[in-house]
Image (cartoon, rainbow, N blue to C red; front, side, top):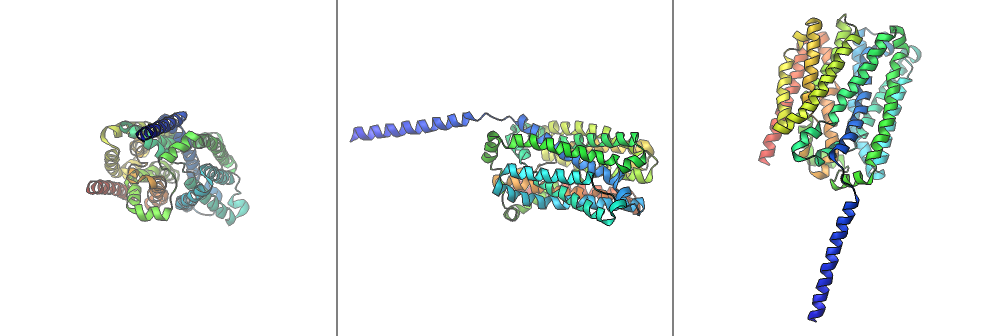
Length: 448
């Protein structure tokens, strides 16, 4: 009996060792994916989305007031264009929730393909859209619907790669890898701004407003197609699917997530509010203000903004190095304080002629790079693994909606009717909200 017991125990141990060995072999069959590979997918995806974003934003200033609101004064036409501009930010959270459900039932690849198909269709639709002269008020309705389509698609295009990158980055380099996706913003602006600046400089006003403005939307559609295949090639591989599953980066019910993690959701959205408010106050708003109240050629001003975007890219990279030394939340808090200081000088610089305006753009873009470089997911690590995928997406949606969605409309409306000093108060309020949210997050973390 003893012999049998010993042999059975030995057999069990051997079987257990074999199982462990087989498990190790199975895991080794999947090649390890370096954070750098994930970063490539993040940069490709974000750069294509930001290019699409800035093509529409620039057209909202230079094109849409004239071709969709020709009977309105230029200021009112621009304000109406900014109202439609905000529709995408209102629609984005709904797109996120709807496409999370699609992913649960049909998979990540179907979700991403459908979202980017809608984005490409909406963008191409704007390129072929008849103007008010040909279609009347119906053209405005169609533009609004296509803009809503862009917002829904952007919400649905969340692929989880930024969260995966943050979770797989080395502990001492999380700030560095966090800034990778944010590089898409300056890259997107440089390409979009360069296209519009080139056409403004080489086409007559009539040709530009007749057909020239449509070309960047064609390019945006083509880039969306390329980005779709590049991102699908990443997220559909077994290695990426395995990593996403291991990290529990799967969609959860939005209502359940909101009930359980509402505090983290609100704090996460407000923590980067200064960055998102500044985002449009150095990109879209100054272009509209210059177009309305200055004799400067829009193409020349776009060149200054393109230089500013290059400085922003440098700032984004620098933010990764700084954040890894002093911490991401400390970096965000320090940048919010600097944004608050900059807000006091908005009237002086914007009313200071070309030198003052250029200084505001270059300083603003540089500070935006430092701040925005760490704005994505600075506090989403607070979400438990089960909620991180959906939580990170909705946090981003809410931050865009509250901080940036109405910024061009509010800033231009305030400056036109009450003066640039009110733009300072608007930017200052964003900085104050960021510092308060970061302080609250730190206090709750210590208490918990």
